[in-house]
Length: 392
Ligand SMILES: *Cc1c(COP(=O)(O)O)cnc(C)c1O
Image (cartoon, rainbow, N blue to C red):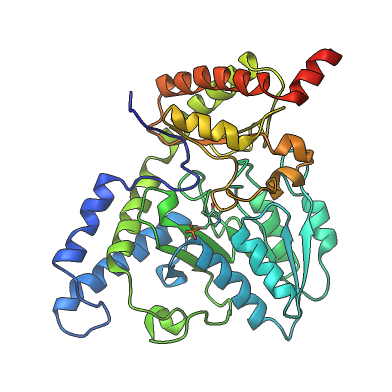
């Protein structure tokens, strides 16, 4: 067994060796700027376009609908601000959900300060939005619906196809943050009526700092980065060639192995959940049981602080998270756990384990064995638990 057990694949993933190998020549040999006209630049240009084609194919899109960005946050910012800007004469109302990633939530909040109105849809106790409530929230001035494909904390997969159908019926743009879903769930932008789709390579075993935005042909959004004429003059900046090549390779591997990976991860995921449920009392599994990412486990342990749990797991060589990496360090409980109706004190005791296809049953056993001891120890020090036991 590895001395390090990495169960934080929703925060980032390891670059696969094949991905790294594919990138290497674009640092050392074919280092040209793909926008240059000499023959030497041809290889880099060709590699960039091949990556674009692979991504397009994975989404059932056209290559010219794929725009390279610096990652998930940029894609989300661009899609939302860009669409809001381009549609401002038509209307200034946006619909999103309460459980979005901060790249979406904070962008919407920024728009609110700049003359837009945003409806934040509630979710049910599993983290699902209601298509009926979505449709009710639509107004004549609604120009954009942005709802994530799958949640990064609790793994719940939203009814994306249904949302796309509603958006299309009302002629409203539909953006989805697909950062957690891509590589885990099949995506078809035609079938699902998705107008904009964000993804980030480092969440599917590609390099950090590179992502893409799928932008349906004909959809008008404002340019986000002004400068050179790269990316059809819609996203300026010299291409991150090694990053793009690495992302292309990572997409290829993610798509190829998807079915097998999902099955493997689902088995370990459910094994982890079952063992924890059976062997540790006073816990709650968060997120939808079936409509959930194959690699996501999210559990609240009553009478415990998630932070203490993480520190003690770390001492056992286990990397986990209490929610999203972006909120760790803050004392507020996760907005996602509050949105599914958990009380503050329960939400504080959350643990997120996100697997990869490399995660083994042996590792899962090691984690649960340690978790049992740690939870027992932390509870034995908790005055709340003491009171609870006394009251019987
Ligand atoms: C990680 C993540 C992002 C941000 O992606 P970066 O590439 O790290 O900027 C956005 N949305 C979701 C759902 C994520 O999990």
